[in-house]
Image 1 (cartoon, rainbow, N blue to C red):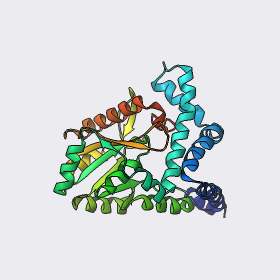
Image 2: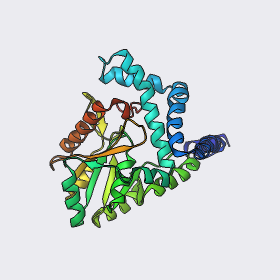
Image 3: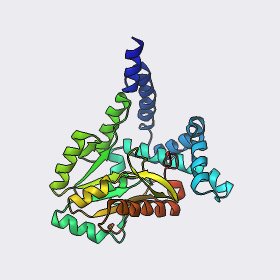
Image 4: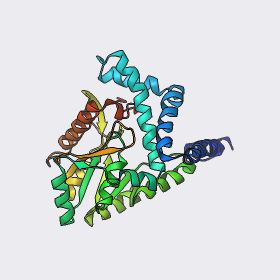
Length: 296
């Protein structure tokens, strides 16, 4: 019996997982009753001022910054301890806001040296592999491009908590479809979508156990090569794209960078890491410094 409970917990089932989901989902539903312009900043305030310190995120942000930005002034470290969880919570609540979020960001300006290549691929029905990081709000580029007629599928990591995963996936799908779960079946559907000329978006700034140790902020960070390998397999441009939060905290600008030149997959992904790093250095509070990006 004890072993069965332990296995359920590992699979994200059981009473504990159910209760955790009930609390978190209840808070989300309560916040959704507020007007959008109040809901988003309130989510950021609660996370940055209350939940992040309790969860130990302040310490994790400080540790990551000490590792790769050791000369950062103490005042800036403290600012980022508030700004980073604020942006993360805003992005999460924006995702759950569905149609209101789409209405807010679908007409966001799109610029950047990679935009002509993206438009050309769209006209030709050619697949594109978009890459981005946990920066700004990474769903904004997908929404803004889909509003302009682009076919874009998203790849996501299913949540361990199966109760939470159900409404999480529903929220992703309300923003735009198709979305593909990581795994054998999701990958097969993703490959078919790319083969048909669709575009897909990858979040590539996660520590991957079997990844290659590439540089990120000057330190080795295990990085998956799959995005570059798919781009090469389908002769698809590998294009970094970002949704940059603006000073008002609610609007965005989408930046499409120049396609990464084809070549060795590790070299291509190093160029992607360099792109994300450069963007994060320009907007330090918008990258997810809570991640355990440098586990090694």
